[in-house]
Amino acid sequence: MEVFLIKAFQLILSLSILVVLHELGHFIPAKLFGTRVEKFYLFFDWPFSLFKKKIGDTEYGVGLLPLGGYVKIAGMVDESFDTEQLKNEPQDWEFRSKPTWQRLIIMLGGVIVNFILGFLIYMMITFVWGKTIVTYDDLNSGFKVSETMKEIGFQDGDKILKIDGSEVENQLEIPMMMVSRDVSKVEVLHDDGSRDLIDIPEDIGLKIIASSESPFTPLPNFQVDSIVSLSPSSSSNIMLGDIINKANGSKIYTFEDLEEAKKINVDYVELELIRDGNILTTVIPFSSEDKKIGIYPRYSLEGTTLNYGFFESISKGAETAYYTLTDYVNQMKYLASAEGASQLGGFGTIGNIFPAKWDWKRFWEMTAFLSIILGFMNVLPIPALDGGHTMFLLYEMITGRKPNDKFMEYATMIGVFLLLGLVLYANGMDIFRAFS
Picture (cartoon, rainbow, N blue to C red):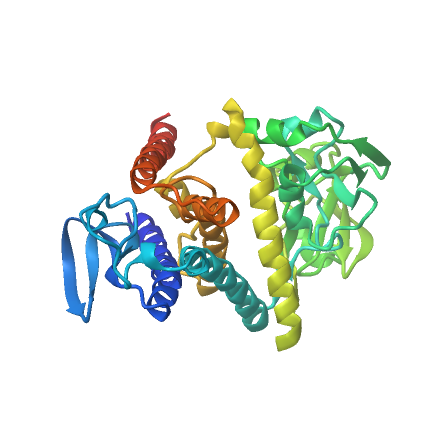
């Protein structure tokens, strides 16, 4: 229950920040252009508001349903379907009376804020915490490979040398690259020391989505954490922090692997160690029938933290925001398939991306990610979304003809029903996965 509450609080806090700033993106240009804003709400005030206060022409409030928020702009056909004002003659302070370019800026303001906010948060994270990556050298044990990737030639323990001829700085980005980018060839180093150039089929992304498995999972190092005094290991050249790479020629990933490898020889175990990047070997004799050698392991995957100055953080933040957006956009094509649609998730899925324990860095990373995604989703040309309003405004600018209010009302109604259906489906999939 505690984990659920921590995740739920992070989700609500993150979305609250994003919603308030998104709506400010509409509110500020509307006010600057002399447009009346009737309501500014965090959360939806249905069936009632928890708090409200009117200042000037605007009612500010906090609604009951924590599913978003909104601004209600006078003289605009929106999802509130309040069309009483539209029956009267247009007033100077109404949205519909403003020049097309002003209305366009008002509608795009929220999306622009989301993209800028995502970039600024990524820049701040890079400057304050740096960027932690797992390099090729950090990943001593390679990857655990999914069945989907094994079918095309990958093996457990593989290390990725190059993707399409280029080295990958951060090995943790490889799973996303396989799904979101058009990868054609991957050069790998197999656990037996052989190299291979694997051709990647065009539909690999869809197969990975359908499998619901990560194509590559980094294998942690089997590292010596403590050595029992007077044990066989205490008199060997094993040191704390050594990585046990192999035992009797077998690759070691877990304690169970070590126990199996010890069965190969009756009297001893030969260990291959990695220490400071160098490979060493040692032979440890068994002192008893249980073949205990007197070490306790810990599983580690230590990355490399890169620190950046302020101006370097700007470019790195922009780079992270760019790839966050493009990777997400590239994955949208999978929604047209049954496999992709089945992976849609609602608030439960979004909440689960937050950590079980409070971590400010992780919280801001997720908030930046959601800000970019919120911006992209809002710019889609669906009536009732900012992108839908923008689409009609661009039509008006190009043709010189403004869609009539009744058409806008029906188009918005269709858009609302589509969005409600999508929300119900996505959250229904969360419930289905929880009980299946």
